Amino acid sequence: MKKINQQEPKVILYYKFIPVCDPNITMRWQKELCDRLGLKGRIIISPHGINGTLGGGIENLREYKREMNRSILFKGIMYKWSDGSGEDFPKLSVKVRDELVAFRASDELVVSERGVENGGIHLKPEQVHRLIQERGDEVIFFDGRNAYEAQVGRFKDAIIPEVKTTPDFLKELEDPKYDTIKNRPIITYCTGGIRCEILSVLMKNRGFKEVYQIDGGIVKYGEKYGDDGFWEGNLYIFDGRMNHKFSSKAKDIGECVHCGQNTSRFINCADKSCNQLKLVCQSCNAKTFCENHQPVLA
Ligand SMILES: [Zn+2]
Ligand SMILES: [Zn+2]
Image (cartoon, rainbow, N blue to C red; front, side, top):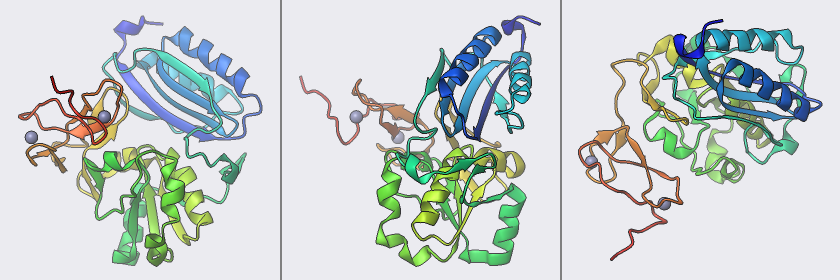
């Protein structure tokens, strides 16, 4: 096997919902496997499955995939590949958590060998287009991410729920403002698809009748249609890479908090204890505070 630094750097993103009887054993196995292959990034294991984002050399990531496919639990996962820089993740973190995504709704989620039970219907990107062809304006896109991510990119005319953090969805979905759309076809979307697996269950449990989710999320949709479909803007990505444009045609739809100019450039609140993100364009490039923090006046 070639040394890590002689390989092309790549990033993989994946998840699988499957009952995991002993998450701690899985955690130790994953740690060993990633250490052996020099992979960095983040893996979460819960009684409901696994969710990972890993960066490393392409050959080592392929070996990781082969090892996963040898395991009864984690075979057959769809991996989303993207280009890495080799420095996307500073370290490896493998953790056991109650939930793969912290909706604080683990009691509502039923996971079997088939995956999540009673979730939204999975649509491939081309099926998204077919549904819109058939049902037209009736169809609504519903953003399953935190609201700030939608500032720089979203599906056309999507509903952007008012959520700052993931557990906010529970309360948000019970808001009567959604009563009028509960009978309409709703396509939920998120970065890689994992959040919608859960969100679609929560929505159905709260009276939304016809819920769909995009298989592989925005990432897979963007690979297929780029900026020539219903997606608009940039895809915000959590790890150091921040923004992704599917093509050179990608628009900047966010607005700089200082001058209002279109931008997709997030910077952290200048208060060191805070991780809120604010849109600040390249030309303003100023120290910026969020609503909760103010500059200390000398
Ligand atoms: Zn500006
Ligand atoms: Zn702040």
